[in-house]
Image (cartoon, rainbow, N blue to C red; front, side, top):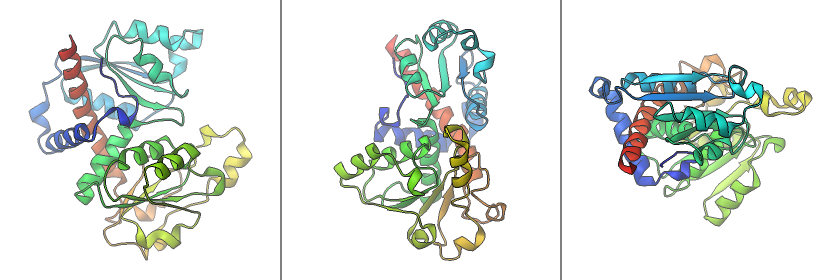
Length: 307
């Protein structure tokens, strides 16, 4: 059974196929409207979500399929003490595909070992968020026309930001990419990612000064400081406004800079940036629907071939 738990579960060739299909869907969505008629997808969200859950649901409905599930742990049997394994074992007997978000790292991988149908990881704690990464890759491809030879700045919460971790893993496989890691010292990128960059001889630079590196960037990927990942409220309050991108800070940026954000934002991007043509984050959110449509079709096709 084919699942998507980590972005590295997909080859570069498969990612290219997904991007190509998603671009076709964005241009001619009606051509794909009936491809999942009779198919049911479960959305098991043990942690709050807006864009990821709704984009998956919109993706399946746009393909002609149906959706069932829950949107927080309190409305599931986990509130009664049921294990993730038991929930997945039961639900996988009802549907053709499961999309799962969980606050605990590794929970979707456990689910994939039990499920009777494909499982898609829609985010597990501070670990992975592979479909957001696919969304980011599609956005970069559509905005820049390439996925190689880029200087990518990642700014904000790099310690707990699962979208950052997955994006570095994905873009590391394309030639001549360079990473600029912009964060306060307390929210630096985890050591295992630095080890990966060093072992793979991928150039990177760590800094706490966004303005200093702004002229070098082709991509600026902003992230929020995530209140839900902090054990200490005082630490969150102290760090939450470390980086705020406003129009003045873009004065020395490239004219073709692409500004991405996985959303939701709090105040790390000022509203006065929204009308700048370099702001891609709302286009990025729309891209999420199309790449998830492409992924759903890929995994269902793989499941049919396995039976």
